[in-house]
Image (cartoon, rainbow, N blue to C red; front, side, top):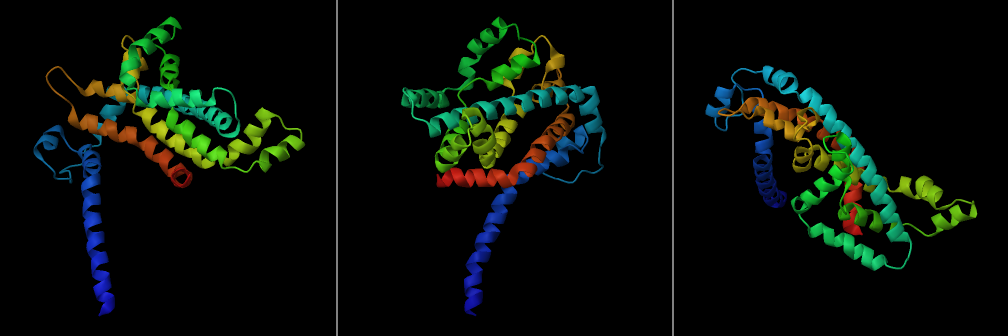
Length: 278
């Protein structure tokens, strides 16, 4: 009897959390199921999730007619390049700040932290002018450089906290073996930071994969260089919209993000837990 009384509040809490969870993920599930409907059913079915007749043609239309096959590879090149460069830059910056004392360190940390509060849209004119001056406008390299720019304060601070917590003996042992700064960082310290690397990779992958404003601005006169986020415009006509084509395109866009998260989720959880403890 006592066990039943103790179990009842737990059951109520779990039921409430399950209900809230279903409400939270409903828009996502609805978008996936909408990609299998016709445009007419999409408009008239309301919140009904089950399509009357499954339409795979929406995916074929998004991939071929709307040129998502081209946009997909553009996005993949830009995103992977941005993630690799940002991990290299942020890990080196975090290592230098977290392990070494140098003049102007506090001022540097304050300066990059201040960029955290600056909306990205406010700097788009200066970024566009800089990329244009470099002759990289209307190119994938221009988008990569523009996306890499900025403080990326969150990732730097994650690396700072992680490297600061590592024992000093690791570096001292490396010095005894004749290892210099670069070798110590690349072969000893960086491999230990896998949870933070995974956290940075997942978050930056999502941001770059879904980026819209910067790729749109830098590819205005070259539609063939658009990324997936900008490519959604293909479904917007002058008087009509291809809703199910857009839902299918959004579903295609989600696949790489989910794949990256599933591959790195173990390290991601470790990285977030370590950041909270730190």
